[in-house]
Length: 376
Image (cartoon, rainbow, N blue to C red; front, side):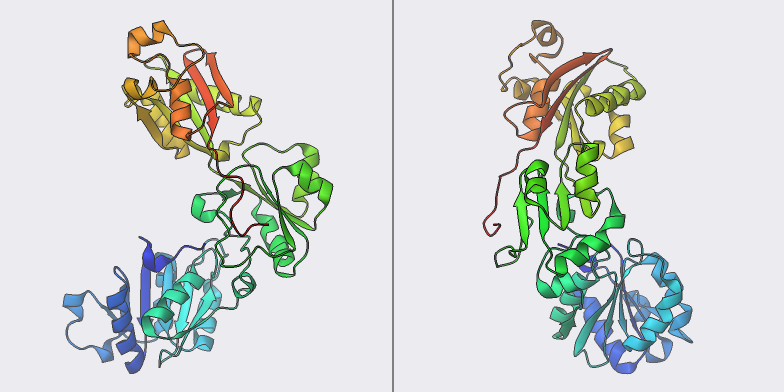
């Protein structure tokens, strides 16, 4: 469930300070495409310039601050104690510190040292160990117990955590096998990836009301809607709120409509429907609007993909009230309504259509299967 810097576009540096460590580091670098290699100049073999290998003199402590800032993952062939002492002054927080993995001089152990979950050090440790034939050493409780990692829950699907301050106490509740309620009202269901049943102390509920009725010690709440004050009080006192990307906004607008007007309609509509802006997955419209400045600007501002369909594609969606006027100008009997359904893969709308000024908006929610095998 965690990101692996060695398998993504993120930058990884490999560092060594001994003769044996340098040989191992060179071997590892050949197996991790794109990784940068740093070792001491006295172990140079003459091909470093051609190979793009970085040489340094003096203490590695001098280059670590720069590497800490520039790279997402550091694989260091140095003793664990030395690494701990050197990186201690550089630490900021678990959301920004890079993944740090330490490998011993004989490649017997690869140790996840820092940013095991959010930084991807645990995943990187397993990959390094596999490549070198080493034993991975991971001490994160949720990994060892093969249970839910609260800070990574749904991350591969793009879910966002709204109240990160609750991650630590809820994580403790999970690993201590307290009563955990997973309230999942929307979002991907295949989040349980271990080859065993979900632990008995973790229960999945389809609604907040169902979870509240049954009781719990900590909660993981996955929903696209805004919670009521009472739900927030009960569920989030010791709970983490996740926003899955499930809301699709079908948009139609007059030519030249400003981004500000479209944005206002979008935000007002989400507020009226009690939906979170953090759960919007994308915008959808007709291909005639592909280059509409206001829609493009809104897409860029929020990082929402902008998906367009041809009139022929839009006309495959049956509409309760097809518009001859819209057809005359676009070739489609509707824009916002069919675009929302096509993009969401849904059969019906959460809101079929609303006209406001120069903007027409429709809202659909991406459907996901109710339950997955292995989830109680």
